[in-house]
Length: 111
Length: 219
Image 1 (tube, helix red, strand yellow):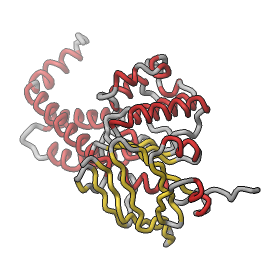
Image 2 (cartoon, one colour):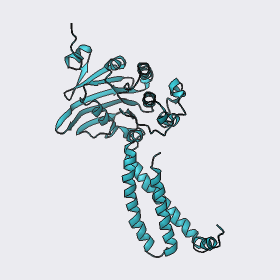
Image 3 (cartoon, chains in turn orange, brown):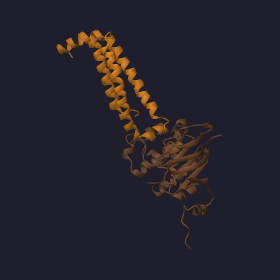
Image 4 (cartoon, chains in turn brown, yellow):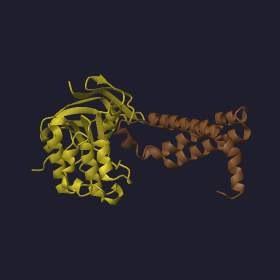
């Protein structure tokens, strides 16, 4: 209830895309890191704008629970950062599988 | 001391003073009725206390703690004039969110028990308003602000709501405003009238006539 779900899904999609770039471009190249620095803050700004519209409709519902907008927004960003790191680390651990076995299997139509 | 206290409230819109040094207090076990003409600043005052509107100046203390926004104390609930609970939420879920201390008492109320699994969008306008009002009245907060709780309600529901306010009053302090002034006079221990940006403590209906809130009786 606290967040507008399409925002969460969009942020996860962006994180997955960044994770994919890490696999393709490698973890030592600066490209994917630059993507994080540029794309994530832009995503957060849009999330906050959209969320603000969504929450203004129910502002008294949240305020009656003692919640202020700032706390909800900071939670969105914190959870998104956690999700991004989880995706990057998971992709790092499964890099060989994702880079070789999975495309090969897809080509062979095993999945 | 368990008390909500707000002093020196000053608020103006477009350089017109709506509230000018207004003060009001409310103790646990007390219902304060707030009356005033349209545009006298009743709702503005409640929003300032709750913290959803920033006053030009105010001094707010809840249970001896100075606070900027009432809702951040988590000891203050506010029933706004419009519906505030999301439509897709069930009555049961809303009660779980807002009412823990007095949940059992609330669940015994017939109109709550019979609508427990309904979503708010499935309720009629009057029922929805009634259940939202009850959710706030029985909420966990020590102090409750009710902005026109009786509007949209049938007379029987108004009477029932008044009974619930009186029943739970020993645990809470209420500040209630409404245009149904007879209902306010019935439930309030004290009446405060907002007029010309100032507050007046009202002893009887003669004072309401004196300050121009009620018309002079025709002989």
